[in-house]
Image 1: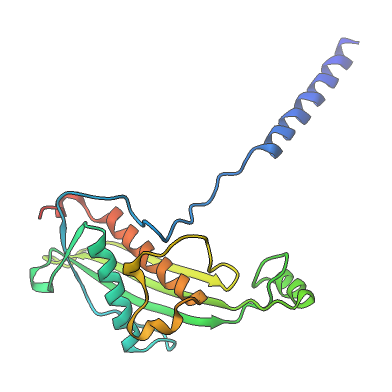
Image 2: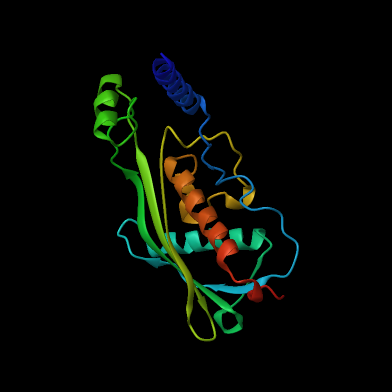
Length: 215
């Protein structure tokens, strides 16, 4: 009799634990790429030189690379953590390559299963909703100017669709697309560019060694 009671109790305990796990709220993914990219900072700054963006994709011209570089430099300045100087005066060199720049990649249809997947294309075909994806990829490398030693490097990728471009957040005025990039304003490519630029800014702020902040 006692053995039966113990078995029943164990089963009840297992079901209770499963129920708690199912009802537990999942942690939310940080998607705050836009708005305030970094906390306000007041203190010493690092001297950085940003080389011309190297275009490694047929989807973007040299002018596009120049416009992206201008936005990235503006982001660095607005973070209040970096002084942008010529390479001869810099302590750090930032090299960035654009490996992908696709404003309208094929993505099938938007459906219940999500865009780009077989299920998304199938369900989207039934619903008749188009899903236009935009993609961008960057290779970022941070190096010491004196000895050319690579301090850190990162691959940054971003993707967005027309269904994801409005995240209910206000874009900073200093990240408004200008020059040759203004054609992408209000499109999925707008979101992708901002995500890549701000993620690059966050990465540098996190990985520049403290000893370089001295001005």
